[in-house]
Image 1 (cartoon, one colour):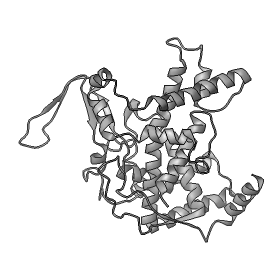
Image 2 (tube, one colour):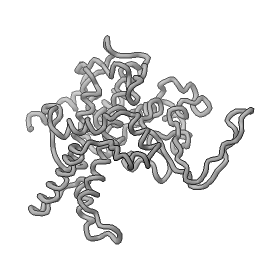
Image 3 (tube, one colour):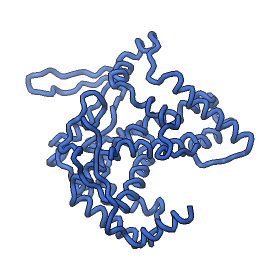
Image 4 (cartoon, rainbow, N blue to C red):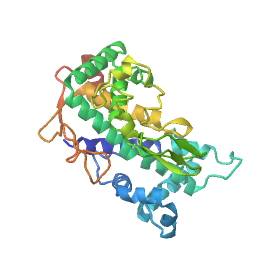
Length: 342
């Protein structure tokens, strides 16, 4: 199956619930507008955003938009309707909209209006739908093409399931050290970000090569940081092209390292990085507890990246998914009870 398609539907439904406060099932209803418009909003030509990031003034003059008006109006209407319904019926839910509703009337500066709330909720979707689903796809690919890694991960999952008697909580999900290392190593190999910063003060960089001149970054200059190149630099990582999750278990040097930046660095790093990691861990836990991932005829190994889209294989993410013959009996009984109760 095409893993990216499945994982995009999953991340879309998570965003719908946690950011917009609505419940949908994109697996059963792949034509729902939230999923269709969400994909449309994130599947923009990469050159378009590069142009707007580079020539912001021209973008404003010629009114170039990344998101179509009918898409932005759809998401704005969701926010407006949700807020009106909750106010009228005194509904409280643990999601992003509720957090923004709760601070109404408590801000010393500009009050949040519908446009502000819609923008905040939409950037949550815009920033995480494509990046998170792509990250999960790469993790699944590496697990499938590295059988020793998959065996070790399943052992960790089964052991923790035994110790927790099949119960899965937030605290238990965060106990998976090897799963955490697999995700971090995948993010090292395939960082899904364009890291941009504005130079705060003039600074002279030393020559990149002996026969070149220094380069001066001026205050206010926009700087693009090549995370992929840094993550693949042998100066910082031993055997950088090899998928080796153990590097994040064996050493603490990569934690809080300036050479590891899948979510950016510093005070302006991705505000939702812990949410994204949890989202990835929950899905992979449930998937690997139940299923085994294997390469298929369409699996590309080694990966050749597409030249027309963001970091994805030329022919997509294709794997075989098989039910585990050795599924943990404690978890299997818990799963069956859940299906019966639902």
